Length: 308
Image 1 (cartoon, rainbow, N blue to C red):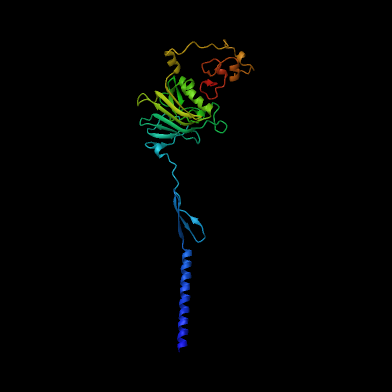
Image 2: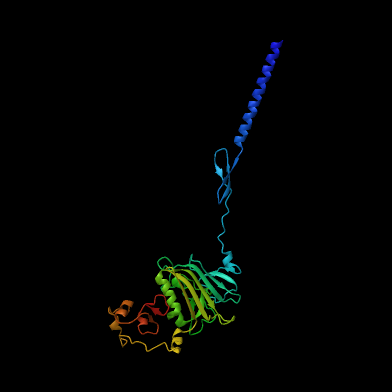
């Protein structure tokens, strides 16, 4: 009888041990199936990584920073205007991209619809090999008719010229003194940027004598050329008249060719004069639209000046 009791106890102990082993295996299996959370701590970054049964690690989706100009455009409504729009009207308190193609040149108006600021992180020169540039050197055949440009002495002046990648709508055009635009500080500034192959940190600040007119009184251009910060400030006036009133103009040096003798300049006799031929004949550049040689030369960009 005692032996039977011992067998019974032994049998019960075996059953108990098997049950514990199964329970332990079940627990282990469940623990292996369950995802484990591992925390990786870095000095600058704390990231939770979840590891699944296949050993793959997944991280929470990262938030992509919005590439917005919210701070820059604060207080302005961003609108789109066709680069060749000839309307001279500007909306007040707006910002418009006036860069041709993929360029981003931002123009801002004030509450009176006056163009007061134009900025560009980088000025990218016109590419006449890969862009649809007209034979005149311009993107468009005409410029916006901003009030004031109907004057005989004012041009439809680009704030950022075609050659520098600017469009021709009212958000890049101001009525500008013709001499200033073609031969003065505006022309010199554009030429300097072209010769440097572009510019960075470009900003134009445009001021007006009152809130009613669209004709600026002065311009200030700030830009960086080859590491040098340039600041150009000038009034919207005829520089020749200003210089004359200050007694800064003298007698014009006479050209080496005294008569309008085309044959003496046009060495190959084709009826056209190149810059090289004009220089060889003793003429200094640029040749302007009021010069007798101008009509025989190719003013590619149509700005009234050859060889600038």
